Length: 126
View 1 (cartoon, rainbow, N blue to C red):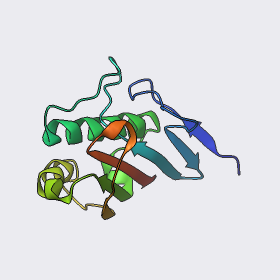
View 2: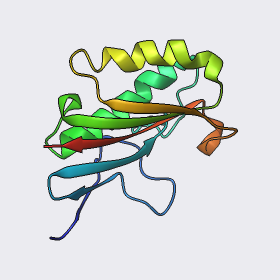
View 3: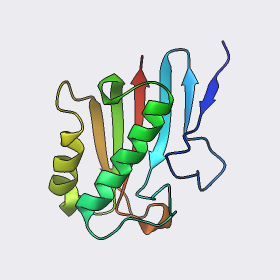
View 4: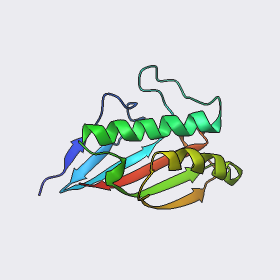
């Protein structure tokens, strides 16, 4: 079974040697997304809420490119620079999973790409 690279023109271009996502069978593995605006390339950083919304919009664009949605997500990993932002991130994140939220872990890390505050990766199954 061959894997298929799924990149979306509506998500920011990868900032390293990786793809937006890889479809292996019916499982989509989405690389960690940060709050880069796909149109401008600018970081969205005016608030942790705005940053988290942009991350989720980037994930959504990749899911849509693979003809999937948040209902297909089975697992997420959230990386945060400061666990004190967890409640605010969690509120925004949760709004994208109104029903049947996926499995997840949240990990505080010392640093993220481009010094962002949050990065989220996902696994979806169709």
